Length: 265
Image 1 (spheres, rainbow, N blue to C red):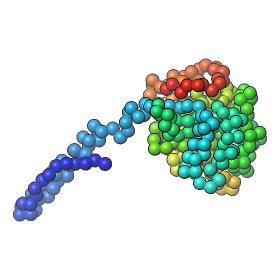
Image 2 (cartoon, rainbow, N blue to C red):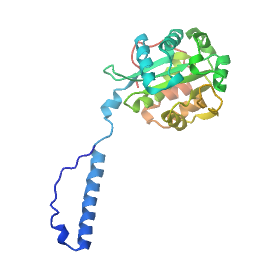
Image 3 (cartoon, helix red, strand yellow):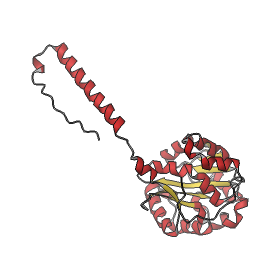
Image 4 (cartoon, helix red, strand yellow):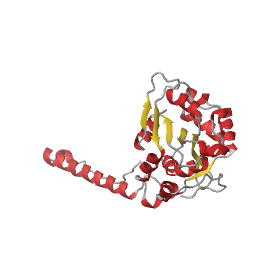
């Protein structure tokens, strides 16, 4: 909220001609507008230090409890994944789950992407099943990383900080590299479950491939080629942050084990 602190005695204005009164009001409005614009320029809407403190971290088992609780606030009905199911997915492939945290350790968001086997992924794409129908055997394990051709973004939740979504997006190459061989990855899928999700998908070039009508989950399904997604994101971030994207597009990195330290940005 902007607070303007100044006083003006206008008790004599009523005795002036109407033209002068209107002119005075116009000048007053102009003064208020100028002060308002100056305050906007000098008062950032987001604390830059706060933005720079965000980082992407591999999730721990304790984080799964936090993710389950956050989903209860972010989603409704069958879109909320049960804690037991999240835990089983995590045990099958821990590298799929990532947290957005501040340097202080405060958790502000999460993202998890599932490597679903083709037969089950086809059912999810067509709307025959919903996300909560996916069981452990429907996921590739860490030892099967070279077989993965697609990933499904099951959830991206950010608390109190829209910049958390940006942190997730520019870290996608790192997340993907921890799950599979990125040069073998072809497609990223995601459901649209909220207006925010709709905007995020469209801004980053996803296309609707299955309408919500007739689907078990009642949400439209979207997809994008992985390399196209990386290029779209890279085109919208500062030059100094494109290093990971350039490495991903021009080299052939192997999948890595989960790091013990936060991912540098």
